[in-house]
Length: 130
Image 1: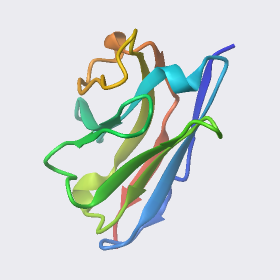
Image 2 (image 1 turned 90 degrees about the vertical axis):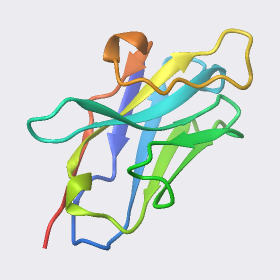
Image 3 (image 1 turned 180 degrees about the vertical axis):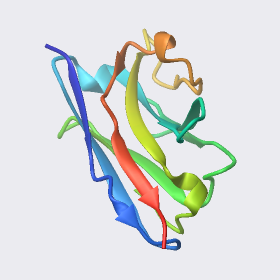
């Protein structure tokens, strides 16, 4: 059974930091590129960050560039998102998502369409408020 289980979400003050984790099971994690996608209250899905299957290539939405860092530990089957300098507009439900890469080591997906991912987690809530 495939599972992506996010954790680490919390209520944090503006300027604070959080680290989200996404534990993967039921599939070969090292063969998949991974992404973080978020959904703010009343808004659509927004792609946040992506990483290739080997963890060597990363990409970020302009809204989080310089503040968030994505990483992937294939030995632990875990994806991370280190978030710093958090802003109220970062408040959202954060999802991790997996995308098969075929034979490419350098591929990652930067879309926000849930149907384009192979696997999708249940989300963890991040609230940034004073």
